[in-house]
Image (cartoon, rainbow, N blue to C red; front, top):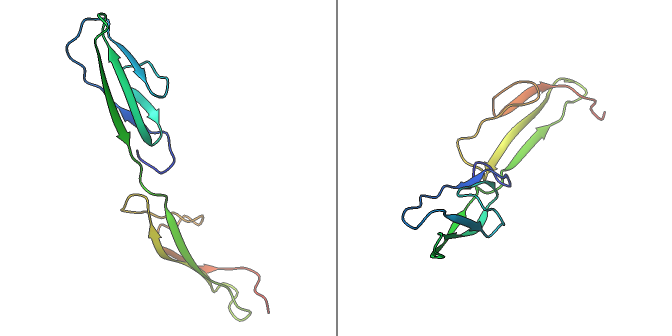
Length: 120
């Protein structure tokens, strides 16, 4: 899977042998050959041919851990109304490398020159 908590996992089967037609029954209720757009977990498929012969297999779809970021803000002061900043201290989880896009459009790991109403 691409991201934590998404439904982007898949299992693509390669089946050989048996007498057509071949039927598929997944543990999540799907009856298609391939399993697509599913979340992390263990999925079991029973493959059955026209003669009733069957094969059972299980597949595990994993996901990266959830992204966690720690930020350190610096507030503007009465003497420097645009002295605010936010710095990314650490980031974990997800899949590196990481990229950043702030609401200002900056792609750096920190932004500065932020204004606000300081408590004076």
